[in-house]
Length: 233
Image 1 (tube, one colour):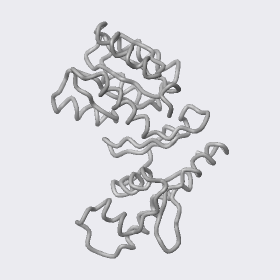
Image 2 (cartoon, rainbow, N blue to C red):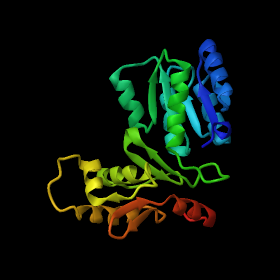
Image 3 (tube, helix red, strand yellow):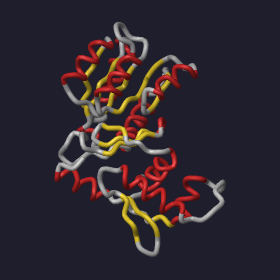
Image 4 (cartoon, rainbow, N blue to C red):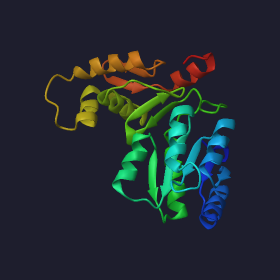
């Protein structure tokens, strides 16, 4: 995802913070739409697609959690919560609602931009598209989505997908996958990975996991692009 092609919804009621951070986002090439109230943010989300939403929590009208809940139920938009609320309960609530990141104010604009870049890199957008058919990994909540639908993965299946997805050029042996998922806690036959791969393939809408005979497994990004071109979901 190139930054100049990424659209950002920025919900912030403090005019100084909103002006400063919006200017930094513009200078970094993002297309930014501002909102001061939570209900205005929801109205914008209902009318257009955003790649990323940066949400304050304590705003007039519907609060940031309400906007996050709306996104979780209706949109394919990544979310960063940007708030002065640093308590554990608020952070857990945000991640339970599938927020991608939680940033506590005050924050350096440069650090926020780096967090935004990191989130956008996790999303596989189809070439020339808006990401509607893309595979999205929400790592803080250990969930994967495809075409906006949550995939019913077990924790082990998610960790296996995550490991392969982040290094698509690499072929992993079974032993490497076991170490990457279980660390050194697993004792048993390394063929257990074959069973997990088999189950993962059943749950993925496209054949993204490639077997490399005599070695192991590899993530195949070309399958995503082919699937998007043919309309498969």
